[in-house]
Image 1 (spheres, rainbow, N blue to C red):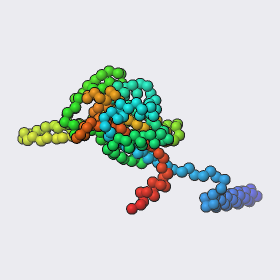
Image 2: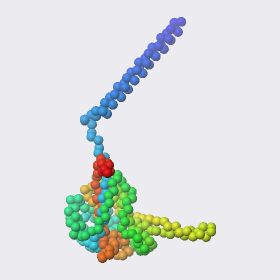
Image 3: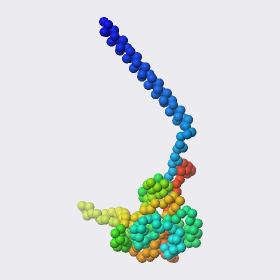
Image 4: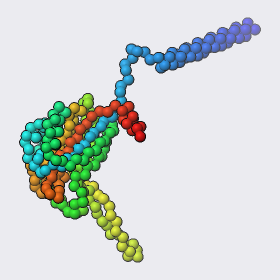
Length: 283
């Protein structure tokens, strides 16, 4: 009987202790929840300010100026830093008729004056995103036939022929890794051909199928890191005068009264997220 009484008393004491512990945990959790709720409603002024969210705005200008106005103008290129790409890439591009460099925003008055002195056909587009994989720039369209000869990555000359094609430049961009306020831009020449295939049914009915096939010239790929206070320039090099060169096929064009060459400007800048939201919300 004494043993039974002692066992009952021990169970009762354990139950009371467990009840007090559970009540204490519940009270602490409620107090903690009120504390964090108050913290959220009244943030500590000593906390760091939230980081402003931004997106990249890339402005693209395609300017068509008289042939030689850029490619044959050394005064123009004295204002440009042509070391924006490595030596091997620069050499391959130059021999294929393409010249590239960067300039500071502080030098913009010189280029603005150059554009005003050379009547230019302007094509302007803007891409606003954190990154973009494929922006197409039309360079020469509706070519019935073309021969292209170019130096590949091994510095060997090779040639191709294309029927019914368009010449494009594809552009992609993203923040440069481990570089603050810097944009990594890549460009690649693309020949987009139109091909037709004849198919026959079991009844000998003929059907023509047309499809588009893009061919990317990766040997001539250009990649450069551009600071937000600079802009990138792409134009023909003197080697672009050869009719079968890449520079001639992509950056030169025939106008009704004269031959033109194209100058491309890629101008990056950061835009606060709230500014993009307010601009898209306007009617």
